[in-house]
Length: 473
Image (cartoon, rainbow, N blue to C red):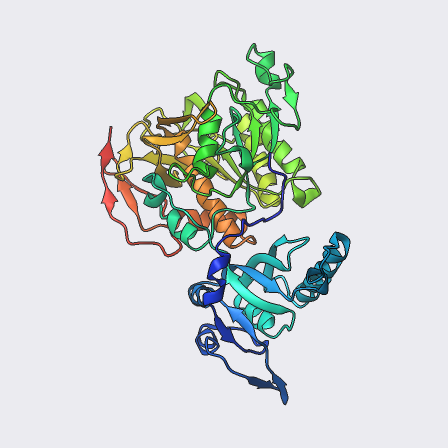
């Protein structure tokens, strides 16, 4: 199981470093026009003082910062003397590397650079760099190069390109360091998921009390530990795979995102609302925002109550009901910067949503086909927030290398959660309100069989002009 690392990035494509351009610059704030200026080598004077700094910068960093406010980068620092000796002194090397890193980081403000990876033995750091940060790094004599932190590989399953996620991948944004809590049947060992799991828990106390299957250890709760959310159903494993599978062909929306698997449905796929609320509360209690061990940013709930649909916004959260507690739990999550998604349900209602997707502070997700037709079994109404691919989706299942294909709003919701992970890697300071605004801001719409139009997720960095699709049984 991968250890939790706050905002970590897997480093690739160092070989393109030598194709960069030599530049020189002062520490002014970098704007689009200045980006074009500093692509050529030059010397600038700043308040009568000559600045000459040789810094090799990948042209792709400039181009990316011309289009958006930040870019994922690897910053190469001046190599310490401890690296050049015949005998490697680990302690000395760590000390020298940290000294150089500290000097560089001390010159950067929060709006300049978000640290994602600070190496122990390698002379570099990685993170998200803004234009203002670029200007400061170019004037820093301890910085010898700035490279794009790119991600290699591609995704072939149709649903990931359908929502535009592969455009983020091509820019090196893959959800790295973003933790998604998946409240479901748990997660099974799988080679394309194992590296993504940061922690596991289980809340089935009410379920076991009502005669359901308990947690893997035979009790109603398991707070932490490998296997605490062991999946014997496959539903949770499939949901997690849609978010973060690292398979080269059947990959997730955010393949480098991390999963906090919380088992709130048993191995028969059933559970109790009170256990779901307990799971949400636990996400708040363990959040790094309140000095907990896990910096969860997203919750996905592909679950719901089957026979109790709700028509109006707020109808399922009146005072004195379980809906009120669900609403309050999600409000607490928002206070610790967690965005919550839930599947709308598969009852075929054209005027209602299932619980808890009907709760007004949860982002509700319905299902479309890969041809952008509304799946008519998908619950929907005027309060539905977004549609996403949920039909014929292949994802990780049970077994050492198993994959399974299925459909439903359960598999639409993790597409949107995965998109949120990409957005949060790109800009970790987004609030839950801003995440919702971004994932629901789309110009792609689909129409059901009675003429109602719904927004469909478009996660591309530069939203594409979309068409209006039809309905599908």
